[in-house]
Length: 220
Image (cartoon, rainbow, N blue to C red; front, side):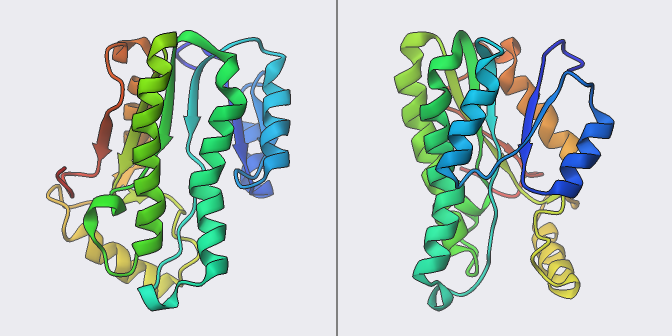
């Protein structure tokens, strides 16, 4: 919004959505929406259609569960694939005709795609699918002068791992951060700064790319 744009934000947490309402201007569209729900995806398209065309689309929703490969169930597979892969795929399909020429699409993947972590095979697989589909989107949307890129965050200080116990979360984060050359976790603002660049005209010749915000954790 500091760049002069009008913003729509979605989320699932009533508490965080209410907090967002106190932080952002009244012109912001704040909508409770589940990326895994086809009905919610249709409702999102209807809600933003009144704005006219879109200049930027950041598909950031997703979640993780960790566990050994033997612990993966069909239900867990379906839940995570629906949220992390099916969701952005259907959101892009639903919102594509609202994108202006010159618009930018950004999707959040994860350094888990490249880490080979033994407890994140399912999560890494979903985010690997995101990387692949954005590559295809970049080629498909180029004819409309629309760019598509992937943000690849490493350990970032958010509540993303809220599903873990405090002890397990701390051990996990300490282990990951110990492998980061910069020696610390990133901040949400640091990830957002790269996202803003990719969504802006400053990145007008960048498409089909992966931008890591991971302190040097992975190399690809």
